[in-house]
Image (cartoon, rainbow, N blue to C red; front, side):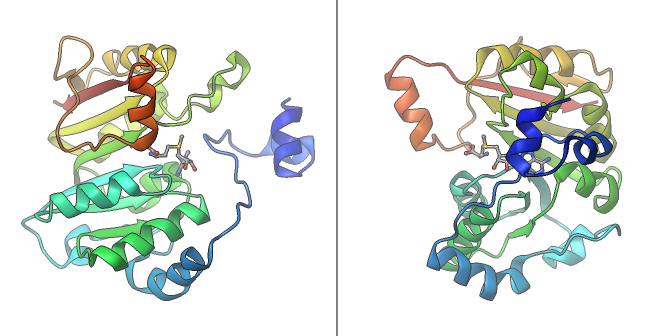
Length: 238
Ligand SMILES: C[S@@+](CC[C@H](N)C(=O)[O-])C[C@H]1O[C@@H](n2cnc3c(N)ncnc32)[C@H](O)[C@@H]1O
């Protein structure tokens, strides 16, 4: 049993044992004024409340000709907003559990007047299972997922064989799955898990060159200057 995880969430070890293993720890996190305001004013407009009911993605975005891309764990949403801004012909559904991040992305949606981005604030595993129709996605972005460094936490890593199966069921034939990470051991793990899924094929020999649509984050820029690596892994649904 994971005392550290129980302590972090202020719940008993017994309660934790009954819950499914999750890829995140929900921290309270302070909201800035701007984030709170964006949550109050823009969540009713751009937020999709979690419910165990399938979403009609074409109806949600009001068009059926656009490609539909899901992003899991967008953090503060800076890359998400930039991508949505530079690809107005595509529609993006971002999923994140962290309230300050959701507030931050809503603020950017307002400032940039983005029409092609919607947000669900909930565990992406449940969103995928209960809200995303089968074979409805053209792409999935998972940028810098929590690497869960310690061996005893590896079970919390988002990218696992079972999760990848679930993802595959939601991808259209030919759709892409793009994972980026700055932790080499997690990059190797992701490559291994994706290679073992028979419904996926790698678009590269192993790691892919960074596609232009993924902006360099501030954090990544700093890392590159220090000689740290970033690995992009892009597979396609057969
Ligand atoms: C290390 S951060 C990276 C954030 C962002 N993609 C970036 O590149 O800066 C990982 C994010 O994934 C979110 N996350 C992890 N598991 C999740 C899940 N199952 N559903 C939704 N969000 C999740 C966390 O809350 C966190 O904000």
